Image 1: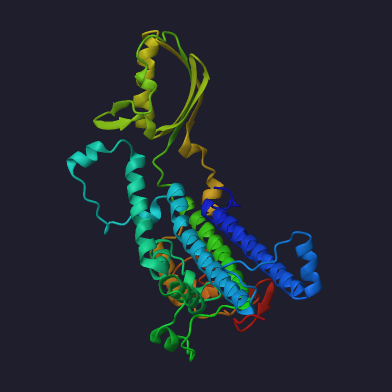
Image 2: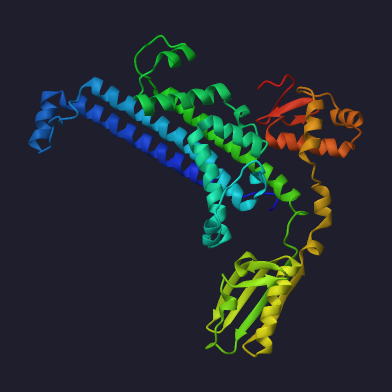
Length: 421
């Protein structure tokens, strides 16, 4: 992954959903206003007669009698449904982002406390590793979906080390939006004693959402999603950097294959081709990055895996070449470990979570005095650079804010007391 991470799929979909929702809201409000204007127009007898003479139907429909109360109720319903859809779009984004993460790295999901039980029949019925992975990530996402916002917050904190509830507008406001969504969906907007007590509401009627409140809600939701995406992107950079040394892929092979006898069984080019790597069972698709058909009898294979995996499969290809069934030409043969930029790896030094926790415990509330990293480093017997890097990790995760010359930087402005200026 490069320095600039592309937008994750879940984030792109969220932005698209919010854009469509706002288009729906604005176009519906526009239609409401036009109907109100028309209602006022036809109240004049001469105008009404003119419209009727020109075959314009001025009769009220069975569901809309042009009464002011009716328009108020329609606008109220529109605002409620828009809020419900906006909060739902945010929750889907917060959950689906885990699917995007799962594709990039499996590290956050490696939890020894989670056990999956399979019978032998079930295991042997699994067609591919992707089937197994689908079951794992779908189970994770179903748990988040059924657990609601509280379970989502917990997952971000435990799996990604990100405290999303500290993201503006903060825990109280985000909880309020979710509680209102719950009341609208499950009680048609009617409040109960617990809800009224929690939010100090004396009116026993239904929830009323005006345009100003709805606008603020959508602004907050968009800002919350933007910062969440930024924090997740920063975290992914950490995870992918730290996994370089742990990667099981250390050999990259690209080769051109020409089929000399096409009438024979060529199952060794099939994704499901099974072979042995010494005494370990292997399937071609686990190391096959791509297979490009160049012509009827020509293919280009790209293999990525361990040296043992690549060597075992390549020996199969060599066997068929000796039998004059195929002809092989190696295009690339790269040792991944040697090709890693050592300077980049050194610059992006990885700090384990235990060390990060120790450093976090020693950092006071912001704003910090100048050279705080040196004081913490001296106390913990660590290098200054380790603590400085850890502080940047915390800033990327949203635990702390960027600070320059003893002042906190927020939205391009600085403040010395930690509050927005």
